[in-house]
Length: 248
Image (tube, rainbow, N blue to C red; front, side, top):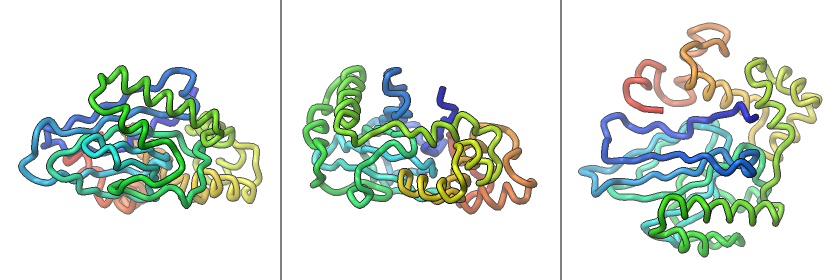
């Protein structure tokens, strides 16, 4: 069982006209996919919508359903990012678990996807197939894409991150992380950097932030002030201000 359950977005509490839906993948894909995601407006907003994306160490495939030519592979950095999505949008995303996507990293981007896709994956074909389909059919199409990526070995379960996630409650330092994955610190450094793009220290910061978003305590930090400082550095907000502004 995967204990890592990242909260990949923060939706402004005031915006009722924006729908964010997460769907679990089929069981046979749960070791590589965290969620299928739909983010869309219900009509045209009165002003531009700014989407607060939380660091989660995941790779995303994004499909812009208002312009099916706009699709691609993307990830986030170790701090949150804010995207201007405009007044009307409709996105379908696949959120892959950290470390499972094996496409050359130069073929993926950071942050928002807003240009036509020119890569080697069959994303344009799948994007066209998704348009106008029911949610159930869209999930089936997305699952079919993941199966094709697995068959091509672009997506492979990551034994190291799986061990880290299984022991996530007992990990407080990079040394703990290395021990839980049965690697030396140097081996862990090489493996995480190669498969996730994150150094162990940054990967641990992301895990701690995600744990903080799902619990009422700051147990993963040395003290309360350290927790507040780390949270603010990662998100731009204190925990109190964040809770008032966003739903996660």
